[in-house]
Structure formats: C-alpha cells, structure tokens
Amino acid sequence: MMWHPMHLHGHTFQLPGGPRKDTAIVLPGQTVVCDFDADNPGQWMVHCHNTYHAEAGMATTLGYQT
Image 1 (spheres, rainbow, N blue to C red):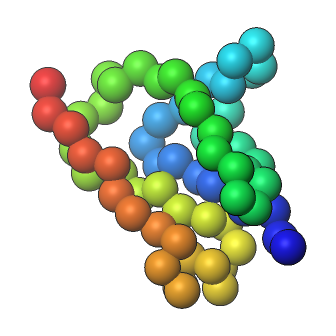
Image 2: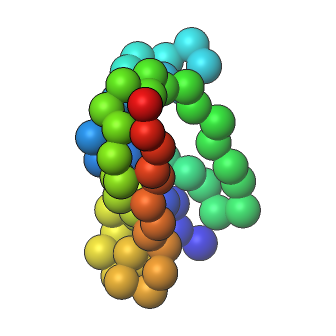
C-alpha cells in the first residue's frame, strides 16, 4: 500500500517532538495527531499530495472563525 503525504494549506503544524511543517506522511490504516495554532481563520484545504488520491476524494476542508 502507498503512503499519504497529507498537506494542510494556510498553516504549519507540529507532530509530537518534531519540527513545524505543513505536510506529514500518514501510513495506510494509520492516523496522525498534530497541534497547530488556529491563527488564520477561514476555509483551508487538507489533501493527499498524491494527486490521484486527492482526485479520488482524499481531500477535505478545515474551517474555523475567530
């Protein structure tokens, strides 16, 4: 199975004990928990950087207001 480089637009985030980034590798069947500062309100895309995965539906939006 293939890895999923999941990308968050408009923010950077931090995995536990790691550097700040905007893309994290998610292994098949796994989840990733990350912390980020919700300091850029709006609607932001979250998607797999494997284009054919995003085109097949591995994409969503993250939205919040201040």
